[in-house]
Image (cartoon, rainbow, N blue to C red; front, top):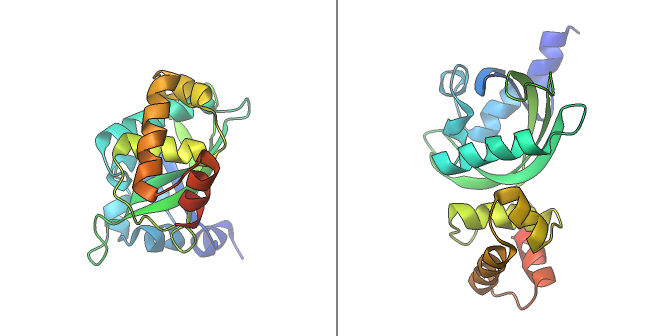
Length: 182
């Protein structure tokens, strides 16, 4: 088996990127996003995000959070492209690395795992609520979330309270559990 075949048949979605443009992807990535090759290859990652703001803020968060080897991972809400599911939002685990940690967006390889079978989006969240929900799932405190997003911890608490109301959670632990289980 050659490397191209391994890439194409990998059990997770894989995307190669340059300057935040998708230069190649495998079959599983196309399946996850319900897309054709033309809808992804040569396109900006922006097409996979619910809003341009989320695309921009995620790019900034990646740059700020890369480890010394260029690795990054998180759970985030992304958007499907295909005809049947166009615009559908879903939870996705994204991990990968910048090939040169000093130039985070120059070139990278990214893996995508669709979490929708375990974590459904049943409530309509705003872009900022989706970001905060993802960081709460990672176990970050209000102070750390605020620092990462450039907002005050008190603002994070306001968003957390709003999320708790929307999902009917009485505590942060219950909120995280509901976010994880859908």
